[in-house]
Length: 254
Image 1 (cartoon, rainbow, N blue to C red):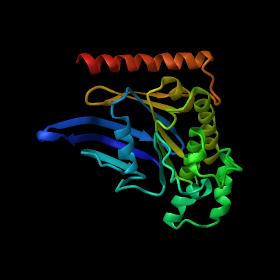
Image 2: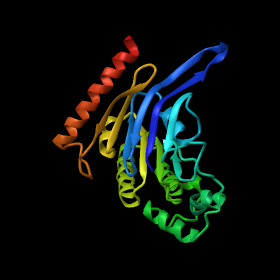
Image 3: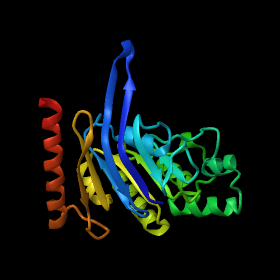
């Protein structure tokens, strides 16, 4: 599923009739199977861009097309993973994973698929456990399995690992890449962490300015798994850091 964003802007109406232009002139093409990182400082409109792609909000101007058709709202082919696990505490792990499929009526071999995805995220043996008894990292894995069980063609992730400790974050980054390589969906991942961007992405889109615009698009051709100690990783990280510093100067001094 190819995504085209054409001259997209997003404007919010504030109290007393004031308006806030968050995004302006966004032109972006995302090909099927890309792992795209949306990188920028907090408050630069990254999550707004993701909400537009999810169909939760609509552009003020411009168009967002998927396979040349406009986004009209949330779609089962597009999965969304939020910053915090949004599990239902009264349901078990396996019931949480199956919940969305049951709502959509997607029940073909559902029990088998639930078992398959719980095993994929490393939670076999915890099928009957309720969320309050899970660690934060395990809860994220349940959310990941629930998002992926419907085999989405587009997977949107809004800083899903930001609150985890370094060890758990690194582990889930590795798991996410392995799942993406095996399932071959399009991933669009929001972060403000440069190392995370270089570790995960095939393409990094740098947002910045006021209103926010695309300041640069970087193709990352490093093989997986990627190591921060490699020289090529360091050079890529340095290029991204220069763009973010330039964006910071523009935000605060223009």
